[in-house]
Length: 238
Image 1 (cartoon, rainbow, N blue to C red):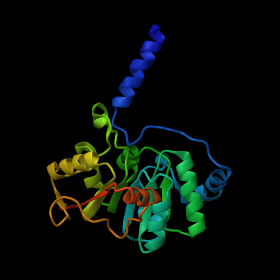
Image 2: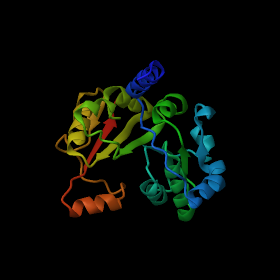
Image 3: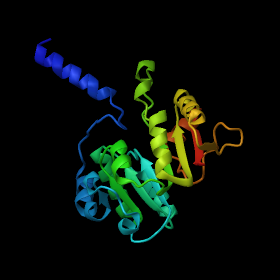
C-alpha cells in the first residue's frame, strides 16, 4: 500500500469511528423520486444550514412535534402523519432516494404536516432542534451492526440518548423499535442505565407494538416467519 493510500485509509478509519447516525449508501433516484424532490422540496424540505428551527413558523401553528430519525423510504412516517393531522412530523434521512420516495408518498397522501431533512441526524439535533421542543422522538429499525466488533457504531448509545432526552419536552417519549433481539437487549440496557428516563413498559422491558407505529411489509413477512420485533418506550422525566 502506498503512503498516500495508507493515509487515506487511516483518515477513513478515523472518520468511521466518529459517532454518526448513518453510513452513506447512495442509490440512484427514480424519475418519480427526482420529480417529487423538485416539486415538494421547496415546501417540505428543511436544511441544516437554516440553523435553529422555529417550529411555529415552520408549520404555521403550534402543535406537538414528532421527530423520526432514519425514515428509510418514508412509508410509515407518511402514514403516521396522515393518521395524526393534529401533530407536526419531521423526518431525517441521509439517503436521497428515501427522501424522494417519502416526498412522493406525502404528495399522494396529501399530507401537509410533514417536513424532511436530508442530513445527518446528530448534526440536525445539535444545531436545528431546540431543547425541550419535541413531544416524541422515534427511531425504527436502525442499522443493527450485527458483528460484535461493529456494535460501537450502533446509533443507540448513552451519549446520543442523552442528546435526544434534551430535545424532548418533560413528559416527551422516545420510541425505539428493532427486529434484532441482540440490538433490542442493547437498547434496553442503554436506556435502563440512562438517567432521567422512565420505562413505559409494565414490566420494565418492552412494550407491545403501539397502534401508532404502522406495521411494515417487512415486519409482516417477519411475523409470518416467526421473527420478533421489539418496541421500547421511555418517557423523559427530568
